[in-house]
Image (cartoon, rainbow, N blue to C red):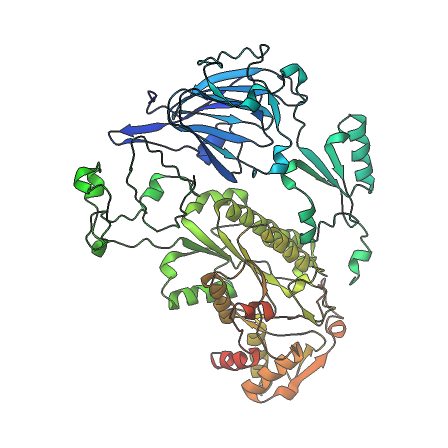
Length: 637
């Protein structure tokens, strides 16, 4: 085995080939062997390694010293390291247009040294020991289509002048690698392609013209809505996205006035909280694992241990533990009977002081899980502020339930209200979605019927967004941002009723005033041309817990009370009648007449706000009838 340099500081060194970087790894060793953080995203990116979006982990096992792999430039970035043994590596820049085309860099890799290889830099190695395991992470899936884009160069080319430690005539080299072209005959690897959408528009024409002028149009693809409708999820299957490095989106709908109209062979996946142990059955065993969180002392405090010799577990170790090498700490861990189980990942509830936030907290307390929840509102966590995210250790969280929103629909039409609404309803959810996506967190976000123009009598989740108001536009923007988070639930509601100020409480108070002989209020006008159903926050909280608990498919779910579709005037009349038997004092009026003398701007409302509940029902959850819930709610006032 190579002499491994233990306890080095993690560091990155340049090589003279742009993007090719050597990494010294911190390896910690003792009598049992060694441990290293082979890929540590946060630390390595801070030192200048690009943020590799790993999709595949490959291991090349080389049985004998002298096995030599040829120089292949592949269409992906990769991070290469050694799990066992050592290799002499040689890298050659084969990228089209590179200032260092043909330049060679060589070094020896062992478990304490790795290298980041950018796309188009040829990579080869020679095993310096028997049983060498060479491992690499890549950011694209291997395919026969992509293999056709490889670029090769002959590893014996005198122009490269690579001084192989084991002469090639004594090494094991494939016939294909011995017959690759010399550097002078190599076709350089072209850069990743660029896709230009909206190519028939004004900007699209200009981008094409500039690409042709600069001689790079051969690396561009151009499309417009007739061949690629980017709003259609199914359209994306026509492209092999691994071939692209850039998309220039010149496409847009710019008819601003018309927009106002309606129109190894075996591996194991171990989930969090499942104890993991192993026993090496051979000398020189290399055990590799990918994780979704960075190790830290804080996280180590949350570990849970159990004694590997506990008779209750009855693990039949192939090598008896009294003959095995086991640390003192592992021998002294508690028996299963004394283990404190690992708590689930935490849940963060934003907007906890709002109507839905109160209901989520109450349900968490009722179910005995509030100890695993954290609650915040804008006074302690402004999710529209990028700097605010540093206060949380996001690796501790598995779920975020975003109950926060700016809901002053008329004030959102003012200059100052518009700014606040966009921050709270669009910027905040976008930053939250980016954070959750980066940490594998499930994001629950609350949407609104205001994202539709109300022309359809019942709205499904598939209906295109068509908001009428500033509030509706900001909520639609938030929905789009959240939909980009891989693990998301968008729960779309309407006419929300819960703890705090709401329509039903207001109507109950007005009914009481009309009944009071000392109050001069005799009747109340309520609009009768907006139609929908109430959503009680308790029911919505139950629905959120249901989709989370049953691991329902990610996506958007309409989530309102079930039952009859009524107008605001109908609901007001029902409240008046139940409270004081004075439903006849509610006078229906059109929206236009109701706001005719309004002092400030009035947001346009959708006429129809009823939502189709069939998708939520397909998960096994049925929202209660809102009229029955209204009766129960009124008893609490």
